[in-house]
Length: 450
Image (cartoon, rainbow, N blue to C red; front, side):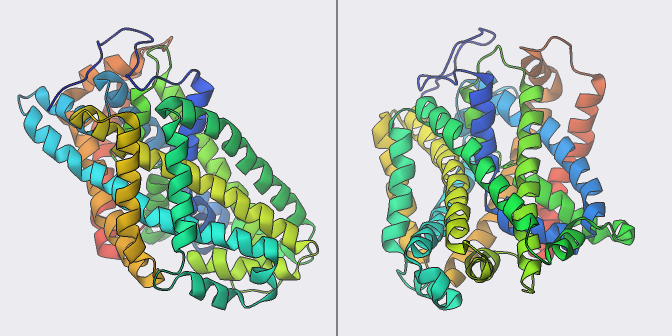
């Protein structure tokens, strides 16, 4: 296993794949990774279901905590080790003379990234198919449930699925940071703009006020329900894309001049804004037409087409909606592909294009047999309940305990004008790490909380 660590402490020394040219480009890339389906089809429903405005209290608490110490840890170890998932874990465990063990442990979160990518590519393929159906009118003027069922059967979306994988791979073929930074600088602002347009339009629908009440009217009693806190914790954890893998590889491409905790909080802020914006665009529209709110794929692929059908200029807004969701989906997918591709490059000496192509072929080859909704649902449950949270716990333990707070603190303070507070280390070791383990355990007990 060849090691490819860059020299520590040298500002501007990048991975062979290059580096992000600006802090803004890095943050937008991380926001692109974090903003995904959970922001769009899960957050709006949970916000209304678990106390409305009151849900924000535990949610924001966990977003700040996980963003500050969780994202910072993944960014910092990537930048410190100078390589992605496998090399980063090896680096941590080398401190106690167990680098080989760290390397093998790193495969767990890396396979988690590949596993999510396999399922995610299928779902984004459904979104692309829905965009096409919106453009032709087939989705809006036909039976939305039947349209969805046709695309989610055995080999029901092969063309759309393949297109999504090919587009994601093509973006990465232009170069790791070059392709990622450029595409996120376009797609992420476009995502926010399109959802803002939808939210403003929805605000003028008769009956939208009921949706705002569902979302924002606080039910303080729900704060006494432990399940509210559990779901807020799971939503915050998974929304920030803390997987023990994906954000590590982005940290690898980050300049030593950048302030990691600051970048982490900016990522958490924009991810939260995306979730709130999605809620304000979706739920008032659902209530305006008296449709029962729900979450998951039925909200996006069945409920919302029914809403757009009844809206003035509904076809236009359906197109804008599915286009913005594609932007969120593709930017998340390229992060997952990049995590796998970088490790294939670095650890096995593959060329850039070869590594990306191999990752794409693996994702498509497995995904083609998972296209039925029930099958991909079971796959994603397995990956998101067992593999990814366990990988995140491994990442937290590896950084804050195996490598140690003292060493990672030095890396986090590079690029900062002020040293980190001693409380940061205490929060990381004695609150964040146990909570990440709790997310894993509760996910198993509750059948998923993210």
